[in-house]
Image (cartoon, rainbow, N blue to C red; front, side, top):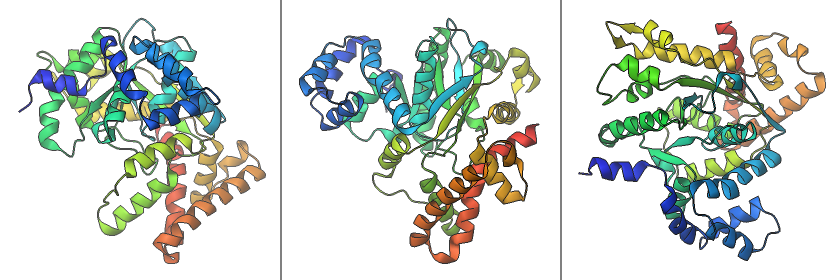
Length: 383
């Protein structure tokens, strides 16, 4: 059985003293070469390897690898990344950013870019342990301020790791280092984002005092991430369809890796982040009964703030209109946009019909529409 120290060392991100050894390993990996050629087109191998070997801290690697990679992804796969609500944050205070989850890498990666370009310090990011594909990813991820969380489906391991993760998150925020974590286990497949109460319960494990005080000290900031074109939309609809048809879905080997790559490179149109109203002490107190936190109620409070924070794009309104026979999109886009979006959906449906059958065309089309329309549905429900 692993000790608490061994679990912490397994999950945590690297510290500065571990960076030189990680760089020595990474420069010998073909995957690192491909990544650096993407980040720095035309740069000779000797030059980027020398840059990496000169790294002596997490900050050094963040500046030569993570942020330039995020900028390149933004330039090549989006038409712009915007944000609002930064006035709700303090650059000197740690927060727990709790975000809806649409993409494995882009949700948090582009958020780091947004924060950097607005002079906020970097934050640490939680990621699923299932995304550690090999030693290359171990060194790359841990050098980039990511720490790992086991999937909740592995209950035995999760029970052992959860108290250590909770303490790690509380300690980082107490030291004024912000942390990002997705609101749920796995990406939303239908565009209807919901916070898992069990995740909120995680943060108070082993707190040794009042749950209410522990949650309040985290300074939870709900973050709504919105995409004009949903990352991995085809893969999400396919998985959801098969799960509904067969009662379950079994991932293929390398499917997680392919999802990471597709999410990074697929055209996403506009992206927007909204930093929603933080969860205050009064908010936490409002969902307490006899000093016990009602985690489902707290989850619903966070969901409402994320729904309200959505930046709904014309794609969302066009999908909503097609599902409901309304004409909301006429105020946000023209006929040409609606035609382009319809053509985009038709191509996606065609790609799936070849595998899943012509008889399922209408159902697949409806599922694509729901994926794009549900942000509008949820926002209207809050309003």
